[in-house]
Amino acid sequence: MDKFTVENYFQLHDGKAIDFRLRVQKDQNNQYSFYIHPQDVDGETWDFKVIGNFLECTTSASETLNSLLVNSETLENIDKNVLFLLIKQLAHKVKELETVNTSQRDQLFKRVQELKQFQREYETAQEYERDRS
Image 1 (spheres, one colour):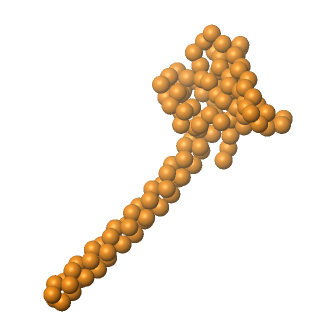
Image 2: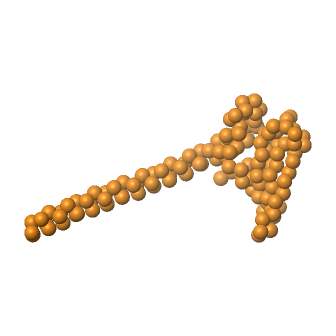
Image 3: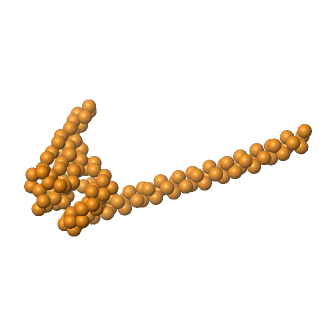
């Protein structure tokens, strides 16, 4: 799956901000992460995990897309690469949800069949007991 990059983040804010606030955090495993936000202007906040000399964007596509959709001006000015990444991640998420829903539907169908079988066996056992007495 494609990841958002710091370059994508700066493209998203191109012409709107030149100063950014960066807050660094270190967890108990000495893993660094940070979030970045344009300083003193409206804009998006994205989270990144630091892995050696690489960054992994941990901001979800849905969070980013939701924040973009509330501001039509931002959506009009968004870099096509950022929009493409959002669409790809959204399509991937939809595919994941379809897979989960199909699996859950199959499990539910199987469970209903098991319950129907149990009910038939129970009714048969009760009829047998009635006939015996």
